[in-house]
Every structure is written in structure tokens, then in C-alpha cells.
Image (cartoon, one colour):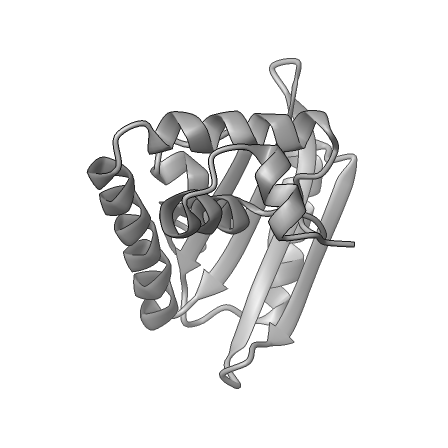
Length: 161
């Protein structure tokens, strides 16, 4: 991964609250371009043989160009999801600081990690956890900021379509 930039593991894996095989990696690379995006696409397809794959170049809300590679593949008999984002240092720092704040709040609230993990797993079982439904951030905010301790209350207070 060093050939394409410096990787920074973020999200649930970094915080030791991963409910399913999902890795979020921010990659520092201020020299990414469409040509490198295509090269990485070839590498991912030939190495991991994903059954779902997406790559794109886009402009974010701050007007900065970012690149994304997302894919799902079977690795050692298990389904894994990978989200690779190419950002500048400022964006990576924001993501890492967000994770650090969440981890600190979890340390300050005994039992919150277990509650978060239980809720994530229950949302997964109900097929309500994912990009267009309830996210990890929804669960973190519910538990750490709103004092919600079960999925039933989350669903009652924050209905999503």
C-alpha cells in the first residue's frame, strides 16, 4: 500500500468496535490522479477478485478532489468490505481526531463499548446496518450522546427510511 500513499486505518477497526469485516482506510496521497486510479483498479481486481467494486474521482463538500475505491471480496472464506479514500493530511487528521474523540468517550462511559457492539450486531441481524441505513456514527451518537442503550429505542427515536 505504501506505493500509492501512506495508509491510515480509521473507523470501527481502529476503535476496536468492528461488528463485521469492514476496513476503512484513508490514504495520504496528494499526487493521486485518474491514471493511478485505473492502475489501482487493475491491481484490486486481479488480486482480490471482488464481487462488488466501485472507484471514482469526486469533488467533496470542501471543493477538494478525492478518490475512492470500495470493494467486497471473499478472503479466507469470509466476506470483507474495503473502503479506500485518498485524502490530504487535513482530512485524515479530522477522521483520526473523530475516532480519538469517540474512543475517549467510550473510555469515560463504562459499558458503552459493549452496548455499541450489541446494537451494531442487532442492526446487522435486522439488515438495518449499512450505507443507506443506520451507520456506526448513528450508533455512537445514540449511545454516547443520547444515552440510548438498545436498538428498539434507537428505531423509535430515529426512524430512517
